[in-house]
Amino acid sequence: MQEEQIREALNAHWRASAAGDANAEHDIYDDDSICDYPQSGERIFGRSNLQALRSHHPGKPSGFEVKRIVGKGDLWVTEYTIVYQGRAAYTVSIMEFRNGKVVHETQYFADPFEAPSWRSQWVQRMA
Image 1: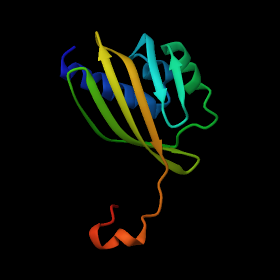
Image 2: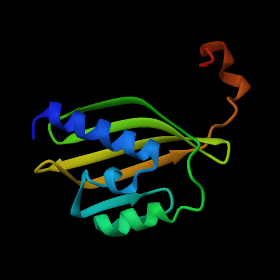
Image 3: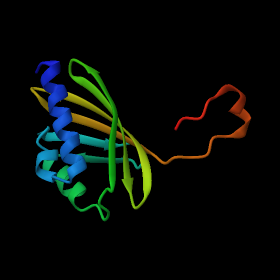
């Protein structure tokens, strides 16, 4: 799959995710895809299980913003924020493609936190 086609597929995937369209959101995945959540030690086998898991999430997102998508060849990374119950989660999705479909995804989720004061002299606050 050409990189332009992968980028288009990713854009459609994230638009569907933001809109809550579970069917369109999961079109990007191979039937035998694997999705890993390393922070909780979970692995999801298969597109149908991934879609079922996400469809049963107790909260629906109230905000979704893609920050950037970078990639080359079959490996692509998306940074985005997703808001559940008024709380933003900073998220990184790493997707590996084969034959135009995601065969492996790893997702990391992080809550915002206060910056430690000791490093204030070297940093600038982001908006």
